[in-house]
Image (cartoon, rainbow, N blue to C red):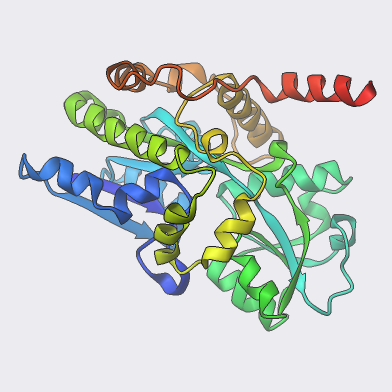
Length: 333
């Protein structure tokens, strides 16, 4: 049996999510088909408790592989969970929403306000970074730990003043219940990053299964990349999560799916995770820092890319710091 843990659920607590090539492995039954020939069962567990709940499964030996956001995976590794990062899981935009009639117009206006933040997830790390960029810290707001579904419902009843979450906030805005006051869309330094990781034990015992999982993941990521000019087929599958087609379309507009959902562990991802580890320590989210590189095992991904003749298919993105410097130089001209 291969036990896959998923950090999150769809709208209405449905056991389906969208937004990534990894989610398509479930939506299209790819791994079930791959391992049916071996009579190996593949199970997917969708957890409303998101990243922290996935860590609990790993800690209790109940998960083999998952997609997981940067902060929960960092917290787990810092706490002694024996996992290996195998591939990039993609990066995802975040938005801050407020009630439609709120007086809050900017991030600075959230000082002293009640804000729903799903703590222990990549959202919390991004939120701390966003606050810092606007001269605030988590101590300057009343951060209330809520999962996305509870946060959305509480925003509608106005029992909170704001929420930071994903594109699922668009529905509330379109219904006239909320306004979006902030987006990370053009600010990759504040987006959520994720990876595909597996337990050390699973990788050691079943290297062939790991390779086959990654082969199917890479093929699916290529299928998505091939459709970036017209991703309607991708969005239609993702809507099974309950998030509307229009929300995925707006969330990804102006972005390259080949770039944001690349499976590569490239200089961009390495720098982002090294910075995430430092920031998690700096914000008091972990006690001790650690080196990123020893946590990563690229051998399976590199083997699959070579087998599939995809070594050069995805461009290796430069470190964000380098891109920022280049963009700044261009802007100065």
